[in-house]
Amino acid sequence: MNIKNIESKEVFKWFEEISKIPRESGHEKEISDFLFEFAKERNFEVHRDSVNNVIIKKRGTAGYENKNSVIIQGHMDMVCEKTKESKHDFRKDAIELIIEGDILRANGTTLGADDGIAIAMGLALLDSKSIPHPPIEFLATTSEETGMDGALAITGEHLNGKTLINIDSEEEGIFLVSCAGGLNTLTEFEIKRENIKKDFESLKIEISGLKGGHSGIEIHKQRANAIKILGRLLYAVKKDICLAFIEGGAKHNAIAKNSEAIITTKDAEKIKNILEDLSKKIKNEYKTEDAQMQIKIEKIENIKECITKEIGDNIIDFMNLAPNGVLYMSKEIDGLVQTSANNGILKEENGKLTFTISIRSSLESSTEEIASIVEIASKRTSAKFEKVNWYPAWEYDKNSKIKDIALSVYKKMTGKDAKIEAIHAGLECGILKRVLPEVDMISLGPNLYDVHTPAEHLSISSVDRTWKFLKELIINLD
Image 1 (tube, rainbow, N blue to C red):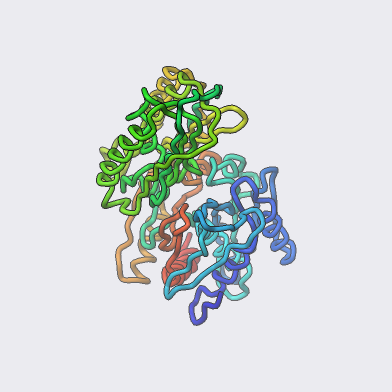
Image 2 (cartoon, helix red, strand yellow):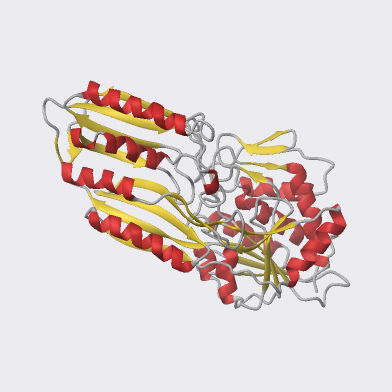
């Protein structure tokens, strides 16, 4: 990667370095080792815990050494999504970076700027010998994308900063001061199979080409969810089919953009016609947001077993009962989604089909309401139900000093007014605030697009501006 003549070239230098290191959520040991060795090589104070979170401390520069420490925070893991054609192995291959004008993207995979850009900025600050700054405590957490497990393990034992800057936002000039909390629900079906009837034929239904996207930030765009669409199709022919195979989605926090099912039926031609007719109607519904949607229905051979009729019907019923998308809008903040659900993953392993739904809300009571609806639907369809990965909301603090300083610095640097917003997505600030209640927090970042999808990309010039702003912001802190 060759980016010259921009102030943030050191940020991109480190972004390129960490892009060489596998860092899928739950598999961060290698990137954690890299950060730990980075600190050791420079004789920085460094701490690492049992889940591979890393805290690196650097003293303030001359004139700033007696100021309060500032915590620069981001997560080291990334969502690993790729195109169907990509042969990329996220466990061992480097992310292939491509520059196109002002855009940096990856070759057929997620870029990992969420949240690699925070790690790169943190490393650039720590590595610099010329940037003025107060004492820095760089906190890099793990498994943010799969439940914020890293943040949940933070105790605050090695953190003394009075201000925390989370670099995990995706719109330049918009500072986040509040976020949704939420949880995941797991609905589990015990799978039993039987031989298909001799006169039955098999059909494969495949849904692809959807945009997908972040299940919090982009849920309001009402893009198609491949799991929900598959449920609609299956329900339309439920009484005349048996379900042989089904799966959909890849990540709980990504809008499902692919799904697939194999069904058996006595009259394949009739069922195929019904499904194709409904497919046209569904594609018409999403012609604006998901114009590239593909629904393919074809006859296949060599299917010998199917899921028992009762269990298959229960699965189809649950797929249609499960809440999905925007459920409530905020009554306090105009345009903010208050509560949503995302049908994220449908996958069979070891004889059990598990349906993962991600629920988000700025109100804990609303989160519990939707979880109860999923629980009822699970019980009515004879499935097991479990709540996992709960995380708290980050409540707005009207007395936040970092908020006011950030607004002032941004105005001075750009001549423009920044925006203060809440976000319908989970940020680690909500969890960290529980163990660091006196720490003043804000979240910011450069312009990132299509995160959690293979189309993820960032604006190079926005990173440059955000980097300049961050450096100015930290020297203006109390």
